[in-house]
Length: 302
Image (cartoon, rainbow, N blue to C red):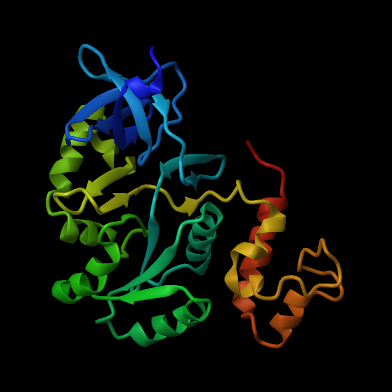
């Protein structure tokens, strides 16, 4: 291989195992594999590659601006890179989980990626209750976008389009929150693209676990990244001592503790717990912090 600068450039727009789809600057998509047996390629990677007889070989990954991880019970694995922003999609129905939302926001903060919360199905009767649940996040300075994708698609587009324009946005949301509806509203050809990618990667029915990059416009300025098939963001890259600093309501009170290495769980003179006692940090948020701190302090199971 020559120097990376002499190779063709490309963007990884889909990945499954060792197989990836690389898009050239002209928009051509090529089925590639990495050089060597181990693959560290993820969707969003900028790469240098060279053609082979029936596809290509990725020789080099350009430095990443950021990297996100997914997690199952046993391990954490990277799955997306070079993301501009994250949209965590929740809905009035079914009710969303605070832990999953919190994990997503912490993972984004740890990677230095701006995040917003999208509240879908605001046409349903429980909308005000959902808004109340999200009030603490608004108070932390997070953007909360509200819409009803199915019953008011035009209104949803008016809310979301300006925020999505010109940026690569990872959309995250458990089943039932409206993620597929959102993707299909903004990328009408998404289903066809999934079929083509599935055939190229030979993933078949497992395509639902394949992270995919969709362009929002012909100029390829904005993109949606969909990564279905997992429940949790991996946080193993976060040290327990960093956790409070990644939760804005707790971070506001750091530096007020008696001990420099305070864990904010049981030490005397803790500024964070004092703020919680004054009602400046919600009880639920402290419970989430304690649960995550315990998880990150435990030895890895893999």
